[in-house]
Length: 200
Image (tube, rainbow, N blue to C red; front, side, top):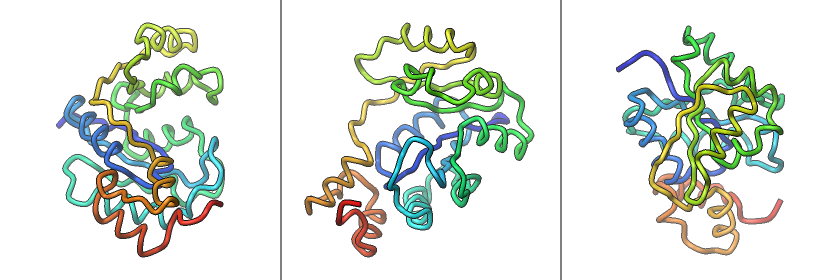
């Protein structure tokens, strides 16, 4: 396997099968380990579950998965986590050059690059792996990168899986099953700890 890694950050609240499918695709397509990095204090999200619960659920979800690494870089941070800071820490920790570091992002985020913190620096530190959804114009995604000064971008085309963490949380609140949306151990963990049972 080549030197390098793929950064896959998120709140993972909870981790679901869509996360695993996208991670598997990246591992097979790029031939690099995928580091799942649960953030401690998401910049653009409020009311996420405590770090300990999210970490335990991600441990369960990744157990036995080849090519996946649970990365603790951000989970216990009390400060807002900006992508540029995470990438700097990862590059330093693993002694990676910019062409060895890949940063997985959704197409919606790429179209909103003007809201990012220091997007040009992100582009200098890593290659963007853009996970585009059906209906998103790939040229528009690349144009957004170019306008932000990001020259290294890789368009990813994993299978489209319409699962989101918010969908899982809402189904739990409605007492609907989630057994086909998350790994079995994650479902059991949610039930045991009574997560997402009430609006917060």
